[in-house]
Length: 207
Image (tube, rainbow, N blue to C red; front, side, top):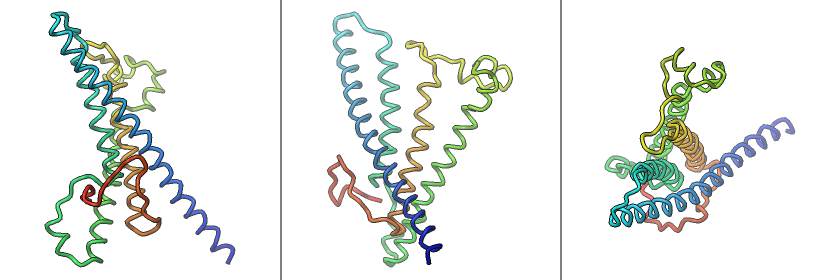
């Protein structure tokens, strides 16, 4: 009896850890989205004023573009947890309640699979192990593997591009965690909890 209780308690602990990690990520994403929206609005206003004054700041356009990119990926991750991603229900709405639940579990599982595949892709692309073997020398890594990620810079900001591209692995990890949390809820292993900091009506979620 005791031997059966220990694995059950460990499984419950893992489930609770996933839910807590997802909630923490969602809280950080909420703050990041608000901050980036303020930054983007400020950049656009400054750009308008400086162009009107015939003294444009050349790096603002590129800053706004990368700000939108980060907003897009962070927002997409948050939408995954909030279940605001779009879904085609022409088929599932004609199924029974049991089969609808099965279809929902499958679709949520595919989100987790996609996130895990994206993590693997980012690791292969950014090659942190190869970078460490090269002594964290981007030029040496490029010479050995033809991976020029760590040698490139943006056009006007002159920032390392790999810093800006970090949004991809961050998005992959956060979407996977959110997908796992949603999957646990869909399987009925944990109760479904309303997200904190977001006011959603019943009509907001489409998945």
